[in-house]
Structure formats: C-alpha cells, structure tokens
Length: 204
Figure 1 (cartoon, rainbow, N blue to C red):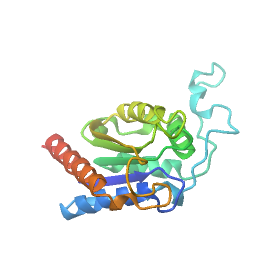
Figure 2 (figure 1 turned 180 degrees about the vertical axis):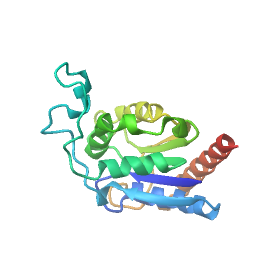
Figure 3 (figure 1 turned 90 degrees about the horizontal axis):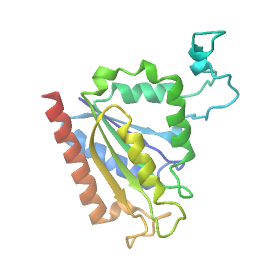
C-alpha cells in the first residue's frame, strides 16, 4: 500500500508541507510506503494557448482528441495520484480561494481524466486538510466548499476532510510553524489514523 501527500502551496516549506510530512511520517511508522509531492517543486501551468485538443472528439470536423499542448509536470503528478492507494491533499487559502496552482492542476485533468484507472480508484481513499480563516480573508469560506467538491469528484472513498482556522492559534500563522500546536498535531494524527483504517478496510 502506498500513500501520497500533495502539498498544494506556492511556498517551499510552509504549514501545509509540515502537515504533510507529519502525516506521512506517521504512516511510514505503520509500515506504509509514502511519497510527498510539493507543488513548489513542479511546473504546473494553466490551460492556455490551446484549441480544445482535449475536446476535439466533439468537433464534427475532427472527431478525435489530440494531446494537450502543455509541456509541464501536470501529467506526472496526476499519474502519481492514480498509483497511490491513499491520497492526502494539504491546501492553503489564497485570497479567499484555493491556490491558483490547484485550479490549474485540477482543470488540466480535463485532458487526462479518461486515462485514470477508474476501477482501481474505487478501491482507494482520499483525505484533505484545508487551511482557511474565514473571518480574516474575504471569501475564504468558499475554499472548504470548493475543495469538498473537488475531493468528492476524485472517484475515491473520502476518508477524512479537516478544516483548520489557521488564525485561531497562538502561533503566528503566516511565517510561524503551526505544526508546533498540539491541537493541530492531534487532528493530523486523527486524520492519518482514520484514513489508514478506511484504506485497510477497503483493501480487505
């Protein structure tokens, strides 16, 4: 069994990175193979300069899709998610919305989704942790809602979904280390353990 953690952040090692490392370390201690994918380290570009290559099957003149013209790392990351039995998402809130990197990554699935191993995904799980402080950032209440829909549409069993008000702790949340908060560690432990339990139940 393999677990993959996606850190959906523009920062190299921010709070979401710390959370992912904490959760994956806990699963490693339980004997699970893990991998951390930090969006910071990959090239993720939005849909652009295209001719709807991914939808040309609907064009009466063409009838067959063409490869996506974007040459970046999006396919590589999606393939990693498909290969994982357990998928974790760690998502911050930027300006009241999920990060632009996530939007680009998610929307690009339009060109790749038909390659997903649907039957395998039905036997896998996904959990997410979203950082959002609705009382500080205009529109931040939409980030958990948007990500909840994203998670539900991944074709996996949803094992856990946590929302943390990052401004609700003593630790300064922009440049501090929220991972040092005991309550956050407790919630991460619960998310890790619950997700692994559901994954093992599905695996039989």
